[in-house]
Image 1 (cartoon, helix red, strand yellow):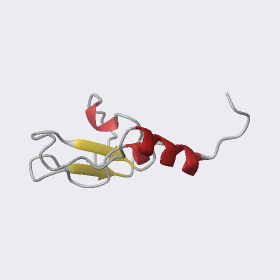
Image 2: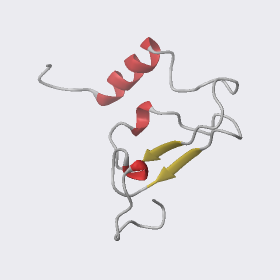
Image 3: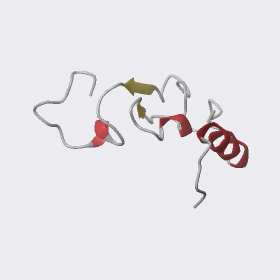
Image 4: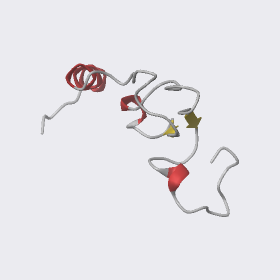
Length: 79
């Protein structure tokens, strides 16, 4: 591993290498993309609804995969 990380440069490099995080509208349907803003990986995910059948759901609580984890009694309404 490198001793220092440039997160912005790494995200840009990843988006170039994998053709970005903007899927064409015809790419997929009936998929709900979820991003937690506290998840460090959310910037690598789609950033907008892909199409009306594949929305992006954004929440500010918990972290990676929180929306698909088993429900917890203390889950905020956004989950």
